Image (tube, rainbow, N blue to C red):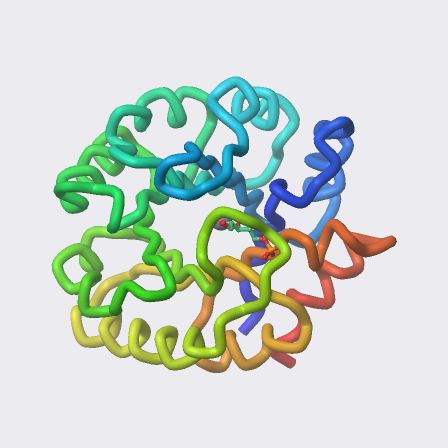
Length: 218
Ligand code: DX5
Ligand code: ZN
């Protein structure tokens, strides 16, 4: 299976944002991953609604917006209006994740839930039937350029089993530390979407790197 590749703009050169988005447009990546951080849920700050709007003016690919913010329900409409096609919220950041997911879906886009490395897969049980994407964080959220936590592989297998048992249609997305050394094993374990920031943007030919990730299951 060829995975969906979602280059993460967190690792791009923000002084050339339009060029970076156009690079993704011209590549075999289907999604653009956009990390939103509030300095509370995670220790870092990143971008907000106006930047997502700017990306949307150039993007020809699916805009996959990952909210690493507390009480994400406050900003759902704003990010959808700014161009999000997939909106993921952290299960740890919501009082009632089922209600938040329901609201995202009612507004007509795809909904995702993200879980931190030390949140167990069982936390997904009540919501997995409702979501389009499960983002399994393979690093502690907040920063790009970290190494993938090895227990991720087991977690992907467990999530895949849960998806099959419940009959959910959710795609499994892996976020953090993805590279050509681990992509094949992640896909074998059940991953459908691979997010890659530094591994794509810190290469001289990012479009070629994207295609290598895409072909990595072979
Ligand atoms: C981390 C972010 C990731 C990050 C991935 O908090 O959610 O999406 O951009 O970056 P790399 O691929 O460099 O680990
Ligand atoms: Zn992310």
